[in-house]
Amino acid sequence: MANKMNPELIKQAVTMLLEGIGEDPNREGLVETPDRIARMYEEICGGAYQDAAEVLEKRFKVDSNEIVLEKDINFYSMCEHHMLPFFGKVHIAYIPDGEVVGLSKLARTVEVYARRLQLQEQMTAQIADALMDNLQPKGVMVMCEAEHTCMTMRGVKKPGSKTVNIVTRGAFTEDEKLQNLFLNMLK
Ligand code: ZN
Image (tube, rainbow, N blue to C red; front, side, top):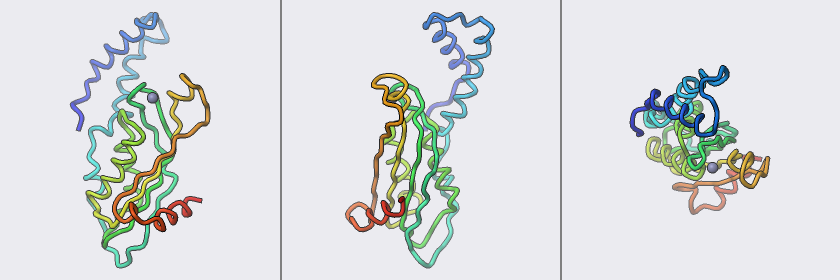
């Protein structure tokens, strides 16, 4: 997990950033901005101080090990290359091995990994690995589709373009039928 968050340091840094871009940090609209941003980061980067193992601690026994899919889990994260938001949807499927977690816990696991400076591919893999490590299912498949504001509001400026990636673990990795089942369930 990350080191401790330091709101005072964030405030100083934002003040310097404002000066750096030629603003007057003391003008009316900006006076509270460093403080506001420091508080904001506690929320949007707070996932770095949370443990997915705790989120996934409570599990329930099941008799049938049918595929479970939770789709359209909305998330907001921050690209670590530009510190700009990327956001979209995560779809998670897993095949239990005798145990499941509450569905809300899948969304909370996404939050843990989204609320930090992140890379989309890394976030998707971390979600899949957290489920494999804590729930020990037969397999996991996670798809993430996201719009990166570092691509759409700057740089190549392609609004609406999405980056899609898929991570498979366990039974999903080799089994094309299972992968297709997941993709069909998303339609
Ligand atoms: Zn970026």
